[in-house]
Amino acid sequence: MRVTFGMTMNSAMADVNATAQRLAGTQLEVSSGLRVRVPSDDPAATVVAIGQQTEIGALQQYSNTASAATSKLSVTDSVLSDMVTQLTAAKSSAASVLVSTVTPSQMQGAVMQLQSIRDALVSDFNTQYQGSYIFSGSKATTQPFTETAGVVSAYQGDASPVSVNIDRQITVPTSLDGGQIAQGSAATDVFTDISNLITAIQANDTTGINTGMTNLDAAFNRVVSAQTGVGISLQTLQAQQSRLTSAQQAATTQLSKAQDANMAQAISDMTSAETANRAALGAVATINKVSLLDYIG
Image 1 (tube, rainbow, N blue to C red):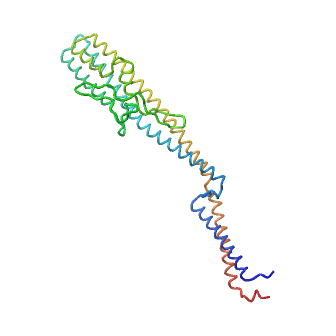
Image 2 (cartoon, rainbow, N blue to C red):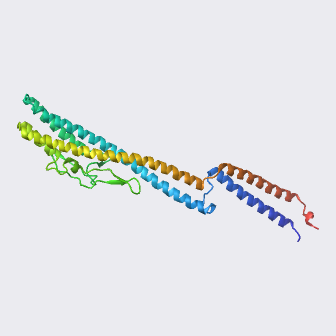
Image 3 (tube, one colour):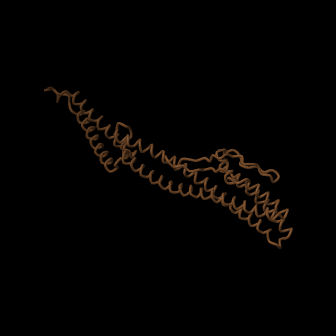
């Protein structure tokens, strides 16, 4: 078979194109750091990479949710701590008027302090976090309690605390039922208890004062119970954040194994491709110098 100049040139140009494509591929692998950029590069690795990317996205969402919940519950914990402080002060004020040497001015001072404590507790129950009421259950835009001239309304929220998912099977509450804390199963709420206590002090009603102190003890216990629950949720969140971080790191490692390039091998392949491409280009240049007479036999 006679080999023509055109056949030789076509073959050489095919080599140039092939080596150029290989060189471009290796250069892209080195510059991107990725061995798998499109499914056709490695179908099996692509399936693994997609799965790990999906997992990383889900873990990141859970992590974001856990972080937001931690911030909100930290505020809730702080507010409940203030409620504990206010109720402790209320019990102390009530106890101070039961001594035989109490004076009218001291009793009036206790009344004023209890009024101030009632106002502070209303403010605590009406705490908002990023525009949402913490103690309104699921009614995040509804103020739990209103106060007019020392009279506090009934609970305006609901008994359905909001919970968020921090994993596929783990949830934590991020809002509380303020009615359960303020009253629970008692006949009256803490605001009524304080108002009745004020009335008893003004009337020097020892029995009424003792009843009021008993009711304050019950309110105190309800707040402590709620704070204990928040504390448990915060501990759960802390442990979950640590687990999510570890899971994200593991998924990222698997993703890297599936799609990242071995840079040492990629650079070596690129160098080989450059050498082959130069050789192919050199061959074309040599062919162009050959006289057409060399093919006449």
